[in-house]
Amino acid sequence: DIQLTQSPSFMSASVGDRVTLTCRASLDVSSSLAWYQQIPGKAPKLLISATSTLESGVPSRFSGRGYGTDFTLTISSLQPEDFATYYCQQLRSYPYTFGQGTKLEIK
Amino acid sequence: QVQLQESGPGLVKPSQTLSLTCSVSGTSINSIGHYWSWIRQLPGKGLEWIGYIYYRGNTYYNPSLKSRCTISKDTSDNTLSLTLTSVTAADTAVYYCARDSEQWGPGYFELWGQGALVTVSS
Image 1 (cartoon, rainbow over the protein chains, first blue to last red):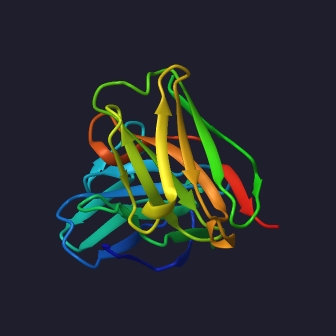
Image 2 (image 1 turned 90 degrees about the horizontal axis):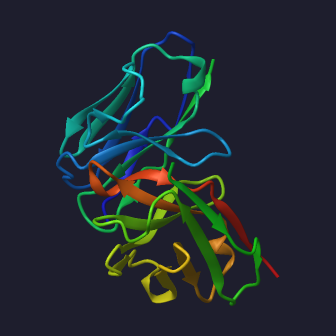
């Protein structure tokens, strides 16, 4: 299985901050990577597909970059509703796997 | 508006079989080209993809669960099902059904149910 390692596991930040979350794959996944946002008690929400394409309705302050084994999710100016847990997921090979998540907390 | 909703017993005894249903509304589970997955979230931990069923009925399972897992669909009532046999406490999780993305296809989970908590305990 392809392992995804997210860093950091926890991050404290303030409204208005620019933050970057990292996802590293154990094998090359090309651009077959997605990002999800999960608010406690809710299902994950697909934010970004194919490394960098924002889903409909996702604010432009979110952006994704990367290729191969190293990927980032950047939020340019944190808003109160962005404090959540973020997961990356690879679709390059079966079984689909997720990172362990980065929990973004309000400082 | 497409909606998915999981249902099933919230408590299952060890060694027994876990059975969940996902009711789909707003679209047909036979919609051409779509994959329907089950995903679980272990308590306080990350997400694990269990497997999918294609609209044609083909299935694929995570090898870690393949020997105990069956995903099926019922066209007559537009539902998906998951059965997991010989459960242990390690199977305690929130179970989600999900559908792939219209634009990006299999593996991009665009639509999710609200999740069903299943606890394995005697």
